[in-house]
Image (cartoon, rainbow, N blue to C red):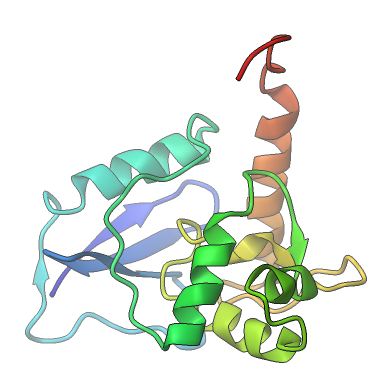
Length: 169
């Protein structure tokens, strides 16, 4: 396993964890269930070059969709939820109920919340775009202040993005 760090300039330093299969984890500086680099992990800035480049572009408002090899580990249900999270468009929000409906399991709202909380690759798998059905921000591994900043970042850049021209695909 390999790791490196990325300073976002907005929400602190992230720890990136991955291997030849892809990006496995993104950890916030102050995260409840954070995983510290293990003694057998090696620091490898070069391995994370594409990840850092895309994160830098995201935080500048220049990237709306990540294109990285991802290797999250989870249950079949969690993987379905994380796939559904990646379908939430940049700058938009969905409720836990909407995600449950999107995976054809509308009664699994609490289970969706649990899977969302265990998302190992936040930001890239945008769990910050999921809110309570009443519109309130709910739990987030990086803290609610970080969640709010990510939502505000996307809202600001989305508002300044040029509108598609008429007849565009």
